[in-house]
Length: 266
Ligand code: ADP
Ligand code: MG
Image (spheres, rainbow, N blue to C red):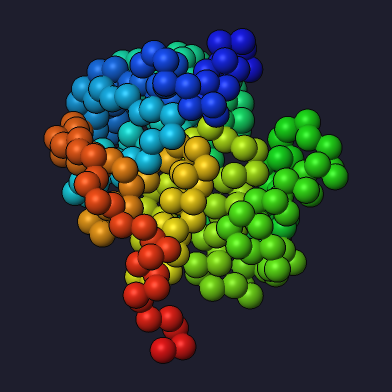
């Protein structure tokens, strides 16, 4: 990490609200993305500009094909914009090459997907350790971090279970633990509750709210209004542009909502 980035990260932790730049985890300016499909060109993002501050919790909604995943892939350094600027913790990553993007991704970004994407013949502990294998972290430290991450999502007791021995909600919690293990600056989740029943979805939102309360910046894609309401801010995409950007008034606390929902045994 360069000194500017270190300073920005420290400013975030101490919640020093000095200048708007120091608080910008993400700044994108006039992002455009074209996909080339033979003769055809798809204009998937059509000028997206946005700031996401340290500690924010953003939900992205919008119809299928509106550009949500394209935008998330760029935020996550999985893809590059065709044009426009992307500053991540003050560093312009829009022109970095693939290798350098992979490094940034591994250090700064945690991903959670709809389909959990766990390795089947691998325990919760080993799945969680995976992202640390590409770092210089020592083995004991790696094991400790994985155990800590599993504890954060309430799965300390399941460390030696395989995915097939866990429910969908537990598997998604392992995926969240894996996303946290390198202590990222931002957590990106693309429809993380899409495969889960409604109570389990709220349990996942409870974990996201706890992580966000502890200072983690989160960006979540969902097509469900009641899931988006757990965030602090809701963006609506349409035809590759942001059409709405509202803060959530009176957002529900997932731990309170869970008390009102029937459990599986009921
Ligand atoms: P969403 O996640 O909101 O459903 P996407 O970002 O996946 O939307 O897609 C936006 C547009 O870009 C759509 O028209 C989609 O068909 C197109 N698209 C997405 N990914 C690709 C790709 N890899 N190649 C070509 N077109 C793509
Ligand atoms: Mg999508």
